[in-house]
Length: 270
Ligand SMILES: [Zn+2]
Image (tube, rainbow, N blue to C red):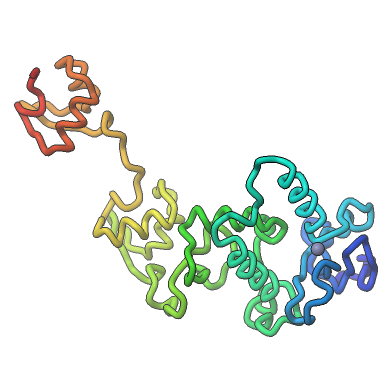
């Protein structure tokens, strides 16, 4: 910790108690805090939250977020909105999230030496906001029994570096290490997902790979039917152009094409 930084350790701000310096970034100082809401838990189970010093001192942060959640719960009880706790996997993901924060940002946590101590952190977006982590998890097909894996073990816990995989599967067996040649370039699927040529996210690539899709189709967005090209009577153009030229609706063409019709049968007028 820089000598110019005023040490807030031990101070109380609302329900928060500062337990130590977390890090500073762009002149801002962040602090590890305990919140009173889990003060009855054994210490190793207590959640550490990271708060901006400025907000602690000016009073705009006074809890881990539990005050806001309680308030939201009160509101939802008085309205028809379903409480957040009915969301699928909510408490499981909450525990996973808590573990990530602890292993990366709580020096007292047993796994800290493998993560935080080695400079592996949880990105700001997830650290400050469980909902952001939750939304990412659900969008990326979280179900029970999966654990979070970092694609690049030297990078942080952050949306574009994480995936869900079955517990106990060594990361050596993941698509992280599957090499794929597309054009003249050969690299891992994870590296392809970060390639400027890639138009889809890693989980899409992985899903396609497991369906047996190879090559350029792995990394490009699927074209809408109307923009895909078709050759008929030695002429090649998009289905939209065929539709206009032959005056057959695009929906009719798409339905016929899906049924496997070709050539004259595809373009007939009855
Ligand atoms: Zn709290």
